[in-house]
Image (tube, rainbow, N blue to C red):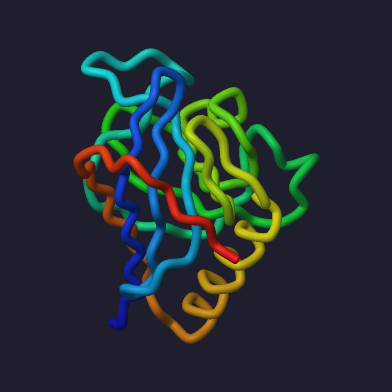
Length: 150
């Protein structure tokens, strides 16, 4: 079976959040924002472990009334449940999930709706032609500068 590979490289670590870059099949798509990395999990305030996870599109158990569309759902995340990729701008919006945006600052992302629409369209296209979708998440050393996406 063919696979669409997402790669999330976490490379900015602050006191409130973790910023990363999301690539699809090697091509940069957008920035990500997650809760901070911790040695010990705190519910809703800790990013998921680095690793490789299958993604399917599922309705959110929490946000179904708000989101009438399916969201990218990460499967088999150790010690976590209902990890999604969705819109949002700061660590207050994550609750352990992965947010996407077209511009990154030190502790927030912007243009989340546009980034989410790009991501969801790519995932839907892949699934419609029979591809599996996987994401690999890795932690990288701190980088001083963040680039903007026009």
